[in-house]
Length: 247
Image 1 (cartoon, rainbow, N blue to C red):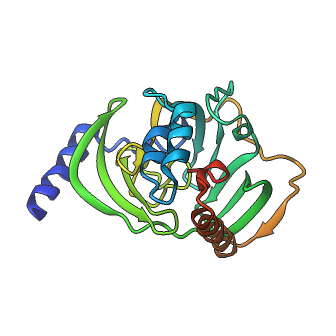
Image 2 (cartoon, helix red, strand yellow):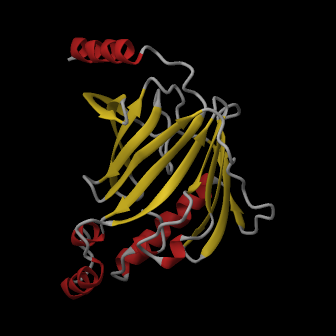
């Protein structure tokens, strides 16, 4: 197994030519969520509530929007793409920014969640990834598969990263792999985020955070405690927590 994995890595390095110049650029992602799959998997909902939600939100093609990631060797910026294209909750077009500082290993998240605006600052703490012996082509980049888990939300995460784009970041809150994450999914396709376009070189318009950020400032652990409590309360009251927390 180890030899097979090594052969795959060598193949990737040869086919990509180690394009080390691919360290500055912009990626446009499609963020697509499938509510029918999510709600069907929630055991704490009553059958009546499940049927009601599926009748309203069932869409085999999913509900989607565009997201945008800009990256450099020392940082990354992430927010909604332009123009906004939201086919889901109207309040998803709200403040949602993630800035990762790779030099000092810190992050800033500015987001509207659970009816409030939060400003979260803390040290970067990468998920525990397991790199698998599978490869996939995404936009001409040979990507390797990696898997992880989110214990708080109960999610299985599958990511695909391009080692020829040697920046350890990705969309949403995914990062920490030896290459840019070009796609990932949660719980076997309940949420799919995948790159649709990559442009290398300095972005024409840099993503900027709001000049005046107003919200509740928290550490990463304090915010996770709030999320955990909110999910527990939602389960106890038989509500779907992803109405107010980004899935």
